[in-house]
Image (cartoon, rainbow, N blue to C red; front, side, top):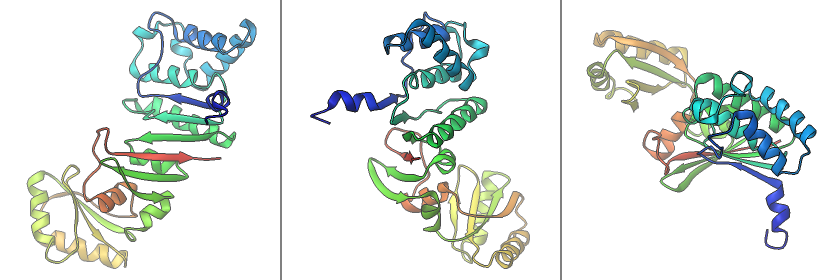
Length: 257
């Protein structure tokens, strides 16, 4: 990195949290500007930009000024700009924060395509579902410290097998469920989701036992289900607290070809 700094910079592309775009240019003009700055001739730049517009589903707002488009649309243009030159390593800093579901799916699809094409991606994300869907390797970071690393399957396997989830109808019901079940089961509690989880190594038998206990309590619930662990569960187990949206708690994802 010291002896060949220019070559290293040429192999890396990065998209930060804030879009590096010119507000008074259209989406297409921003991409054309980036392509011309990177040495493309006018005709080659136009062909490249058109392909990026198709890839990131930018066509419907390609001729709108960046200052007039939504945050999700702006983000898609910024990601497209990072691929004007195909990098060996693409660094994405929370690329889907604040995006609508459609824009998020576009980004996910593009990430998968880039990995299939041989690009290595390093990204941070607050969305554990996103890490589970995209990552080959994950580092969980809590208050600036790496608390665990591994594949999604490895991390989920650390906290056991299936669980029975019971979702209370309201916060008062959650307190009632905790009181009713805490003496009989090892509970994991998520107040944000009004959810109580119980380990279920015996699957159907454990589901029936928990269901009977909930029924006898008479507490209204919205849902009871048997499910496998998620990365949310892994985060809870490994950090002792639910994931929060600040700069100190995030997931570092590496998706490699």
